[in-house]
Image 1 (cartoon, rainbow, N blue to C red):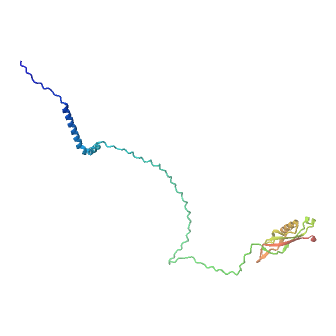
Image 2 (cartoon, rainbow, N blue to C red):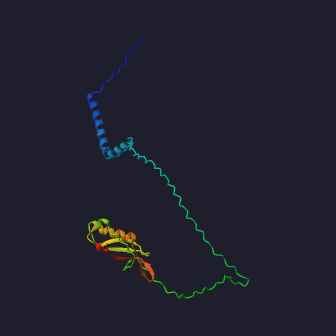
Length: 220
């Protein structure tokens, strides 16, 4: 057997100088790349921002307040207006035309008014007049108490006499000085005396008259 001795290849380790050279070359290439890419940096950043997801801001919509509740308006029924009472219109009787085309109307009878020969009488005044009246009856009695006291005198009375000649009102116009005689004169004239009534245009009228009543002890 023949043996042969083959040469064995030994792996050599890279030295530090070669590693350093490689590292420096890489750094230089990166630097050159960065310098070359510097003008394109804004475009690259824009592309990056466009690639990022867009933030969506949600704005909450304001909900308007609910409308106020509807108010029901009650309809007021108008009051019935009372109907005016219809007045009956009386139509006058229609005139009937004749065969000749004329309208027959009732004949009007002329009424002749004869002139009156009577003289108009002026209205008599209702207000009582002032007059001097004559006596019809004038009885006078002396009051007993006045006789005892020996009283005497003349009382002037104002007497209203009606159309029949009877006194209807008596007033004392002038006293005689004795209330007893004044009262007796008034009462007797109002109750017992009568007069001739006043006359105006032939008619009896009411009149005021002044009547003296004398109580004289010498007449007893």
